[in-house]
Length: 336
Image: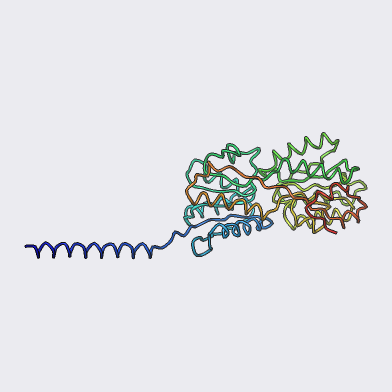
């Protein structure tokens, strides 16, 4: 009898040891979670945002093709194409979160996720004048991101232009009238222009062809109708091809250009005030990290990047412009 009891106890212990070993062995070989992150960017001038984002995600512990996979969409620069890419990432690619940039992509993310629990993060989306978020501190909904500081940046761009060239009284601006950045940016710019006694020569457009057509119509006039050009925050003004056209006109007529994307300072703009696009991507990474760890996007505050100023002293010299010493000292970079 005693022998049987001992036998059964020993048998039970053996079974327990085997089960425990199998459990621990199974835990040791479990496949770690691999996150799927969608990236949407139609305007290649802003591709560096994606590079900054990936680099910062690596610092946060995400290794591509090990514990994270990026599904990248680079659609055409029109709302329908961008919306299709966002839909594909959600429905077909089954991503865990989407990071989209700049403005048109941010708008598409809002349209696709509004009223759902699907998380998304925008990069360089303008929060003023739109409905991307309820507020910067409490976004609400399924969206958070990195803000495009358009209104204050446009005002500062015009102020700097008139500080550098006090004789400027007429400033040409052409912009996509359907771009979501425009309403708030124009409101701020018009107010600043009024306070500086500057006339904005506004050319609202919907196609690149219209952009060039206005300049071409002025090219042979004795008075082209403006003293300077100011770059606006849309997909046309930030395009390398459009800037080449704009810069050719400005060089021929010896007028300054106030730019909005950093490459423009190196290619002929008098100066650029912008933000570090790599930093925009870096700022987005912690937001995505929080979402992947379970935080709701609507509870994560929107962040704003700092402005950056680059002055091209070579262009200033060619135009006979003396840059005030104060502006040179506050510039992040001076091209000599």
